Figure (cartoon, protein in one colour):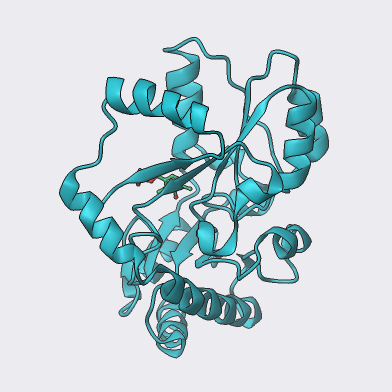
Length: 283
Ligand SMILES: *Cc1c(COP(=O)(O)O)cnc(C)c1O
């Protein structure tokens, strides 16, 4: 959702780059919004924070027909599960801060493309001239974290699938959004483009009362009540109904919900923790 501020407020209002927000899971809406002046179509799949799934191949078809490039924010899926360049995307952006580093102790970002000429331009225009240069210590931490990346993702995929299924069957959980669930709007697309698993982020609702949701998050003992995601430890963060951007989300999310990033703990411990915290708020 930071992309909303970046594109809408900074690019649009300060840099004069016209941007439009479109529900990318709705291909007809994308077709209606695209014009001969469209230069770039940017998608995030699964998206932060609702886990909506967008068909990369279909978006690429529409964008390329109109001469526009496609960039994909692959942070939620991670390259272990999804490789957008294989589906024709022109760029991938990845928050190294999350799964690639995996320990929540360093920040970094990457842009990936098959087009070396464009990569050179990005290197000089965005990196050398503007100064998006990572510190050597952060680079070292991320490199070191990346060594265990595939092992961590395998474990996280398995745990998240198990926990999402448990949540879906738990009384008083109002909805669960996870690409690995058959009930998910985007499950068939996710099956096609997420080859090794569905990642570690689960979005779910327990109550439309923000206070109850906050008390539930605070009652957790194993799972940490904190922002960010993709770390070794499980993190949970409520997205309350008074959030200024809640109107942009699909219907079922508009009364508030929770974003849960599954970590490396035993899945049974995480399930027991969720259960006791739900009970502690009478759910
Ligand atoms: C966290 C996040 C980012 C930005 O990462 P930072 O390294 O924290 O700046 C970008 N995209 C998505 C989907 C994210 O979750």
